[in-house]
Structures are given as C-alpha cells and as structure tokens.
Length: 259
Image (spheres, rainbow, N blue to C red):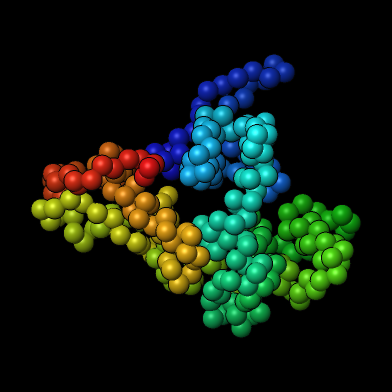
C-alpha cells in the first residue's frame, strides 16, 4: 500500500505536542480512515477534475469547503464497493450477492446489518443502554430512529446487526484484485496483470457483482498494475531472471495513476 498511497511522515507541533501530518484517522460524517482510502478518494476526485493531495494533507477533508470534501468523501465511501465487499449503497437497496449460507440466515436483499462490516468490521450488536455504546450499537439505534421518523420498516431486528452473518463477504468466491499474470511471466512478451481471487491495492470489479460504472475502471486498474511491475518490480519479487517478460516493454504509455 505504501507504494500506491505513500503516507506523509512530516511532523508538526500543536499545543507543545508533536503530530504526524499524515494522520489518516476518521474524518467526515462516515469517518474516512486509512491512507489507502484517502488515496483512492483522491483518485476519484481527479476523475472529476478536483486536484487535491490528500495523502500530503489529509486535513483538507475537513477544511476544503469548495467543494465540501467531507460530505463528498462520505458519499464516495457509501457508494463505492471495495472488492470483495459491495458498497453500503448496494446493500441498502438490495443490489448485492450474498453467499448461500448468508441468504439462508436472512442476510439478503435490502438489509442494514452488513453495512457495519464495511464501515469497520464491528459486529457487536445492539446494547440496551441509551444512547448506546460506540460502534455498531449506536448505528443500529440511529437507523431505527430515522426509520421511525420517516415511517419505514427498518427490517428484522436480527439483521440490523452483522453479528448473525455466517460468512464474510469473500466467501462468495470471485476475482477481486489485479495481480501479475504469474502463468505467463516467462514469455518473451510484455508483462500483464489479470484478476485474482484475493485482495490487493488495485480492485477488479467482477461484472456479476458490481455496477457497470465500476466495471469501467477495470482496464485502468489493469494498466496501473502493469506499470507497477516495470516501475517497482521488487513489489512482486520480480527481476529479469525469474520474469523475462520484464525485458519487453509495453508499446503504450503507462502511468501510476492510469490517467
């Protein structure tokens, strides 16, 4: 991840205490966290011709108001799947594929519980206190309150939590990241990347699982993966002796961002 989304290690002083400038803690209504989310959101903003360096200055999430990045970041996180996870929006509207065992347990269609797995993997359920403890309990109580306010059914009490999910999202087997095409690294032709059934920095959006607007990102992510093999082969423990394809450069121009 450091190759794709390098952290800012510069230090600054506040109230006689030293802080790293690159503190990627939760910011915004949905608490965007971690350098890879800041970096991926920055990439999204570039597609909208909004050029900011969030890895260098993550506080821009809170301080930049034109446009209001805090709200945009939260909407982006809500709408964007991160394979093997669907987006929260897909779950809320029922446009996601649950595994067979999860469907039998009631986790299918439009439910609230699995969204907690996407936010921060908290599946502690709801407690009896008011306003409730931190994490999933407070989210469930808030969801119930808003459901009541708008006079809509929040769904079965059990599926408001992810506590009863039988399997994680990755149990629904599919390809969900781009990795070097290991089967063909020995060939006398340019290296390439292919979808793989495990996680990585560059997502592959399987058309059977994800909306078309994300599937359209696949080719750009594949080319970014190819770029990284030539730019930093040590990321994959590659060299020309074990991967002769590195001797053959692609004929198209590659960039780290894919733009």
